[in-house]
Amino acid sequence: MSKTTDLSAERQILPTELRRLEAVALRGRDRTDAIAEANRRLQQARLPRLSPTTVGGWFEKGTPARDFEILWGLVEVLVEWSGQPPADTFTGHDRAKATARWTSTKELWKTRWEQAKAPRSVAAPPGIPAVSHYVGRPIGEFDDRLVLDDLEVHPALAANKRLGALPAYVTREFDTRLGSVVAAAADGQSGIAILVGGSSTGKTRACWEAVKNLPDGWRLWHPIEPDQPTAVISNLDLVAPQTVVWLNEAQHYLLHQHHSAQVASGLRGLLSNLERGPVLVLGTIWPALGRPH
Image (cartoon, rainbow, N blue to C red):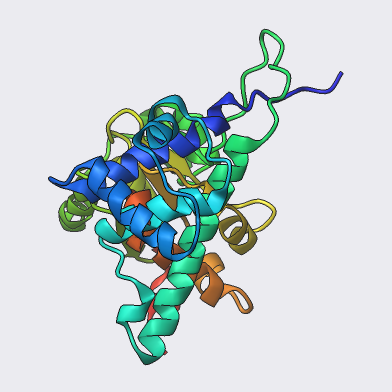
């Protein structure tokens, strides 16, 4: 018998992200101010006006808009107010980059709207958990076995088996700098850190020690299937706020012969998108591979 998926979690993504965006965007303003600005733009585009009741249904009840362009009229205002300048304020190459960023942002919101509009499926039978929309798993679920197998942390050497697979961790000077990046992410500021070091110097273990005590709600995602770059490129839109993107052996992602530019561009967009943060990208690489050529 095939398993069915409960889509209720996917339906909640749109109102959840709307509320998150609004909290970042308003900053002393009122929702009615955003609606007024959206209606000014909608009128110019000869689209129907918004009412506070309709918008309240989007935010509080999760009722999806009947027309995406109407929803986008409000979202576009909130995204601008959250710190993403309009593309027409730039010139030349910067304008092209800003236009691409706005196109990506609009496509992301359209995906969320389409998921909210999707027909409801039959709920999963008892005992079959609903499938989470977001990639990764809660950090609290990682035990020693998952840390070794999924995160690729090296176990203790055979001579030290009496200490266990993950013996007590001894901090080093760089751990303070790494910890500051992780602490900033916990406080809401997205960031990236790549540890450079030789084989078996404890790079991956250091990353795990830095993130294992992040607050409840944080997830960790190791993109690896069907291959590292494809996993990143195909699933970046499914990265939730409060996610650690785990790039162990970062050369497989960032130095790939065919896909490195696309991976780097996607990660840069994720890190710079205020409405999707905070996220934290952690990676490791050997010195020879990480040295500029």
